[in-house]
Image 1 (cartoon, rainbow, N blue to C red):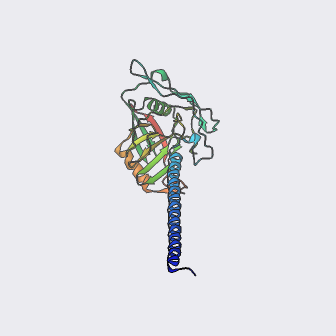
Image 2 (image 1 turned 90 degrees about the horizontal axis):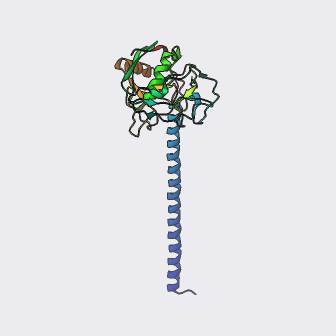
Image 3 (image 1 turned 90 degrees about the vertical axis):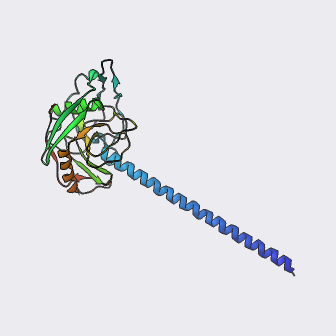
Length: 278
């Protein structure tokens, strides 16, 4: 027969085993909760990345949302500054095989691109006029390309095919002459950004894919202060009258909102003419 001391010791051992099992179970629960929380965080990050790349990719090689996506970089190089203050831009052929590209040549004299002053363009649409001021000092290659394409009537008759309207994320995307979201010129060039590049209300910025050196003709106009990584070239600003047009289009909502929270504007926007004023 076990003594009272032995029974007490056995009870203590049994209690200790129970406490150890409970501690192990609590540890497993905490570990499982951590794994679940990490998975949710990853899903949030991935969702944000898909939204950004889907909305702001220069859609002739659309990333994420477009099945024609291709992240193949071009051979375009970052601009280099010349002794006279001009810059050398590289407009490289887009060899992706995208059938929606339009060949209008490339901007002239890329080896001596002006890098001072501004250029003013008038973007006439069926919803109103927007005056665009391009900053050659901030983005000389993008400004030269944008101006050249306007001179070639590249944008005339095209639609602004994509709208996003969220707090902290409001843009209208234009610049695809095919209206499919996958069109552009037959060349690409490098982005002109810095770590401090931001996208406040009234910004004109160039769309691109997730790959570097893939800027083309598509651009987006921000009608709210928009939070984005500094990867998209800021080429200029929209005037107040133009912002009023954007606000009205945004208020009309999105037609057939897609999984990335974007889609065609319910109030269609067609560029009747985009011309260089000065």
